[in-house]
Image (cartoon, rainbow, N blue to C red):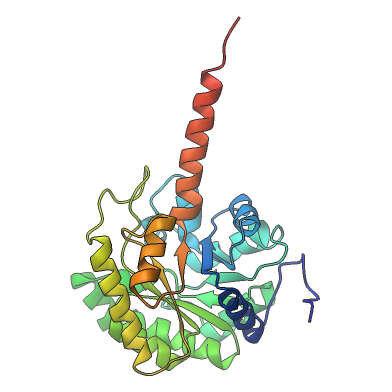
Length: 286
């Protein structure tokens, strides 16, 4: 059945989003999700054939020339930034594919049931847990957990979104987190293996090799599969930065696609603008 909102931000139901993803897999195509920090990125991620667009605070910082990790810092209200990008930049220019909102679930100032209602009303077709504390470790992670701002808040948010019949696509970094997200009802689980390598503001070197990233990814998948067999799995981050890298992970694990933010919008912009500017600088002068 045609979506009546086509061209107006495309609010899809959870069932409709899942049907679209399974149709993609039914055509033997990978599921590709693009992170967009600007309207122009979203417009051409859609044109390139992505299945979903996710917007979250890191996109704004990334496309302003700063490292994506700035979105994890206290440089702004992550929930408000994601909503702002959606309302004024991305939702008005995306014609057809579902747009997902990054939600900072551990923000103690937000009543999540109330905020998720606003996300839904804005025209988003689901949520993603970002900023995510799953990628924080060490003493700081311990402090977050002990003060009630840990990953459990993200898991609870996913469970609430499922209760509200919202599509959920979630980052996790460990098998235990994957298991808990699957128990909470996550529809898609993204194996997050670190900050993306490369470019001017990415990390210089991956902490893990591509082979080890595949091992970590499969361990995450196995954690979720221990409780459910209907979750869709995607890869993200670390040394998985190019189409060839993502293809390798698909081959070596049970992932069926890739989530690219820096690797899609930032690296593409860096390369294209640099090369085009060089071409202009090489034109002859009479």
